[in-house]
Length: 174
Image (tube, rainbow, N blue to C red; front, side):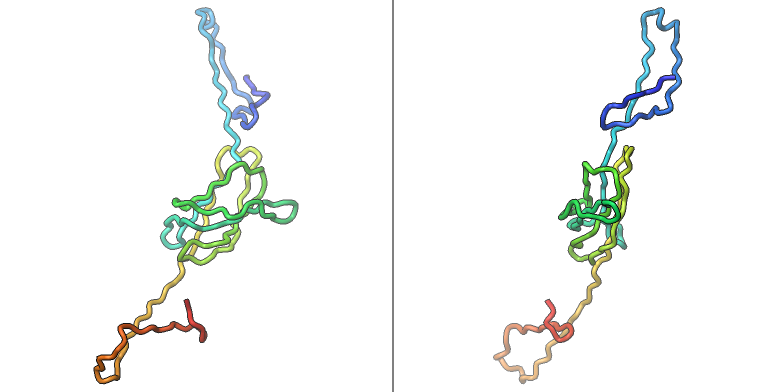
């Protein structure tokens, strides 16, 4: 049984319980060596967040998040202003093992802010990137149309255009 007793820094062993190997005496008599390859997995303390449209699952560029890490009994902000790229992805590397949360601080254009924390855990022996997904709901839009009726007897002095203010709760909406 071959057992790896020390693993290079930044890796974990695939053979913590050992691996049974057979040495072929005939091969050694011909001056050829028995070769056993031991492959270790790199430790990965990384997370990838993908931002999606709630209805279409299209990726969303431009969502901004802060990243919080659990310290004792509460979460503390460790990074701010992390924004999804053109593929709707954020990738954070060099984390420590522990519990984390992404919290959206700015929604992509045309979408509602989703402040629901996205929790994840980086394990001590992680060998893959942790992948999480966040979804946003598109802002509902309303179309408004109107028609101006002139009551001026077809006067040639009509203005070239008119301006109409849209009001919401008595205030001009912009």
